[in-house]
Length: 79
Image 1 (tube, rainbow, N blue to C red):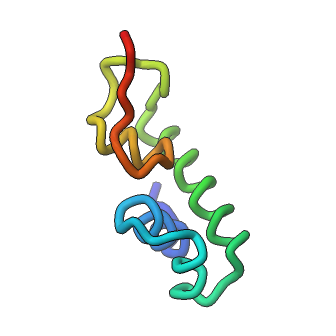
Image 2: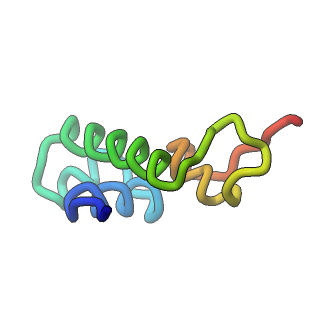
Image 3: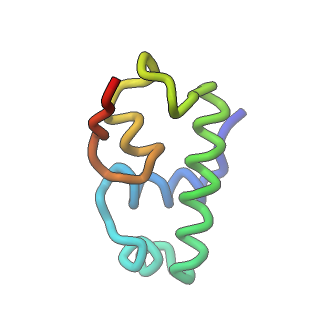
């Protein structure tokens, strides 16, 4: 299953490229709420596709977790 283009674009702009939601909305020529919705939906879909359990301490690399968590930076987990 592949993610729709608009969802991939939104996640790449916000999650990987570091654009703000407002800047991503301007680039995509949509409302800021649309970008927020797309990014959230895409993060959920990716987590499901990758079978990622956010509580799993042995899961994906820190950068992957950061994109899925929406923090823009690797989280520091306490084990």
